[in-house]
Image 1 (cartoon, rainbow, N blue to C red):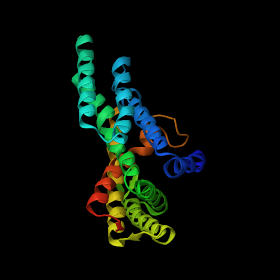
Image 2 (image 1 turned 30 degrees about the vertical axis):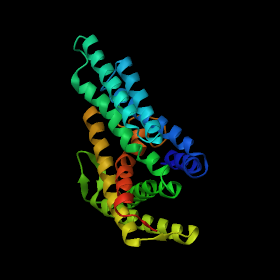
Image 3 (image 1 turned 135 degrees about the vertical axis):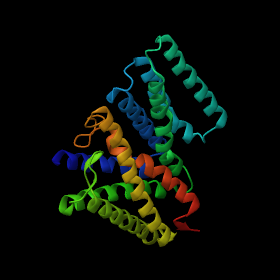
Image 4 (image 1 turned 45 degrees about the horizontal axis):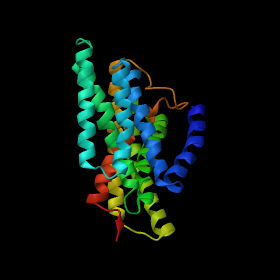
Length: 271
């Protein structure tokens, strides 16, 4: 617990500096690293893929996805990259004399393309108009709901929510997390309104908080299922007290693309 708090105190200000003050390319570099490390954790850390070349291909592709999103998601470049990745993976399957199964290729595609594209919603949000004000929304919702669930669950949690997948989660913590997500989002738009002069829609902000909190719980459970099936406690030990990159960003991977969609469908800032 102590290491978890210390790591958060050290890393959170660094994250805010990169997202809010540094040039946008720093955000791209940060999430390229996160995607590459996350791909490594998913393939090697779980034991799904322990062959070096497929691992390297997947990590490189995962790291390039945020860069591709920063460049505007050029369709031609994306198709070319997808074709090369497809050919490389199936070449490895053929060269392995069938010891590299299709299931491992599927995990490589999931870790190299699906997860990075979802997480790259942060890059797409950050490079949009007023993106620096909106890129924090997924973090506010995910971290507030996670903290609310943790503290409420520790205080009064009695009824297990998912005893097989995530034994520590309780229904009391679940509803505490939903409440904290909504409150956190309302507080954030208050800051946008009175601190930066934006006209905000509080109903939409509440929708962001509630939907984002639900998405965060779902994302957490998704990656907990993988850990239970592979028999690992954490995806890695890169972040003291938190585990690996996927342990810390599991909820963000689902929350970020949802917030990206909500920003299009239900703008929180009134023009």
